[in-house]
Length: 455
Image 1 (spheres, rainbow, N blue to C red):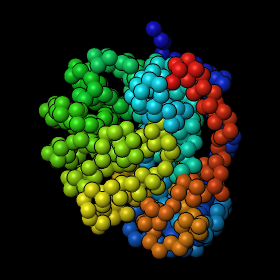
Image 2: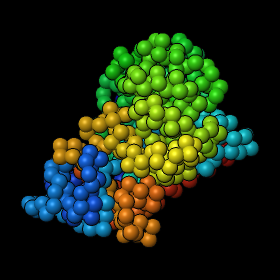
Image 3: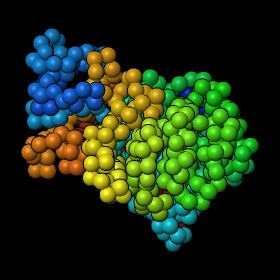
């Protein structure tokens, strides 16, 4: 039976493991940083601003306005850019990132392929998956993640994923889960969860749980997990009504009957949920995360975004996983979300591009309980900021900013990324990670597992 590692043991393991991420630059952020002369600035709380500066001090947004005075601040020229909040991804299985594109094999489609390979992931393997996912997140402008860790095979696996998140400097929630092959009557490791919940990993990384819930586990199991999470004050996330079979099981009604919904319980997918269930979820304030690319790719169906909008659900967006999605591209997630809604409803004006931008930033942050800290550019909020070029072949000329960001821009247009005031990407280059080393480690990890499992 695996033993629970203390912090010193976990740090030693990850410092010496061959798959541990190498940080190329750990320099502290400057005391003050001035982002000078952005062509456009989107606060997500008001009208766009033009030719605007943003001043950061101690990780906080200190001031926004034109021609702010420079007083002992490092200056970054952002002419030719849109300045906006970093994206918030509300549901991402990071552990299997090295299996990118392995959505089918000799074992079958996505589910049987992952079932075959998941038991062979070591703590080092899940850590390199998180390393690779977080590097791609930063590169594409995602500054807050919800790491849905649903292949925790031991306490060491959880410790490895948490350590990867902490050393990355990326903001996020670690959602404590279960092993992929756990039986329906087997709960997650609630003792280890309790130990982890007592010591938040860092100022940037918090703890929650990702549970199988009524759709994928026995009543005694999900109820015990709900009770434990609420006793510990942890937010809960669960996949619900992903397909017609799951929806027919009445899981949302079962949650409602036991007071299992609410602002602390995020529901993922709802692809096959009835409108009545959506109304029930909206009434109690449970946030919802959708991942339209993977919902299509895995065969769940077309996400019912028009019904979700009509029900007034609190919506967040996600890339879900790289096995299916292939890339962490919130720009394309926003585009697909708007266009599916328009196509399904046969109403081009049903959803504004600005609505999708809010789902990917301010509303996504609100859905994770972070709306007072990130998701908008407002003095007094933490400085999670990205700059998107508006002078590239695919972004010129910038006639409508929301449309440009949801339908024209791409991850390689993100030239600057700050998280909590710390620069992670500058001039289009990641500066805090050794990307070739991460890529080599990930390639070695998945090659070993594929040779072991013949997938």
